Image (cartoon, rainbow, N blue to C red; front, side, top):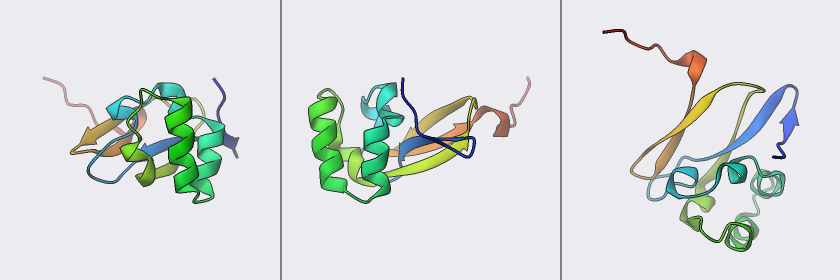
Length: 101
């Protein structure tokens, strides 16, 4: 799977807006790293990004594409993408304070 890496950090696409997620609403994992999609979002080509997702990932919900942002995380980091009411957030494993019962 191709990824965009700069200065030891990897671009991850996350849909922060409310209403519809991207990865959490059916986009495959490769879509959140897709170099073409990262470039389109980085250059504010939202309609092109929506068209690209519809063509490349037909089972993904394109509603979250318009609210995608790029989060740069250290290469090799473990993370999850959480969702609440369509708003996604990225959570790094090492930044989580787990509780013990």
